[in-house]
Image (cartoon, rainbow over all chains, first blue to last red; front, side, top):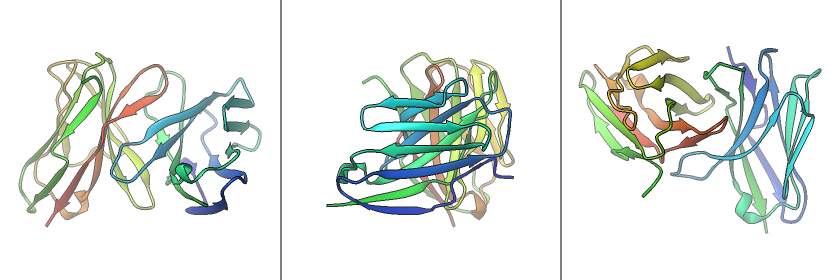
Length: 112
Length: 110
């Protein structure tokens, strides 16, 4: 039972354009959402997060949007750079619960 | 160096053997986690620990054993390795909400 889903296994965009990565979840108890970035042969690194009391959080080129009614979040990267090429994981957790659930990941390729 | 380390980075073992993967963190974080990463599944939680001597099962605990006698160490043991346990294993510790991951151990069970 995959409670966090990333339905696009891969995404390719041109340098300078916007990258939009999507994530859906099914558990209505989730109230904290995170995006991690992973390069080959390295562990995931934290990128950006959002609490369910917000619908948007921005950090430089990265913005996460949360639509609670649709149980959907997205990560926008503007402008995309070749160094952004990596696998991006969406994750979710519920307050007081350390059982964080991850999506299967989306491989982003940014072409020069 | 501060951070979270895992050893070994690569391991090949045979079916039925016992294998222990090591994890060490220098931040004194209370919570530590073990995940496995498999294609199509993302990261799945195996076990986690809230503090020394406190551990709990995650999503996929069968076939694994953990211990935490010291805050900084959280070893994961496969008591009798099976081919289905071939995977990349990540250890993590938590700051506030976000988790900090080690570099991973690629385990192959033949």
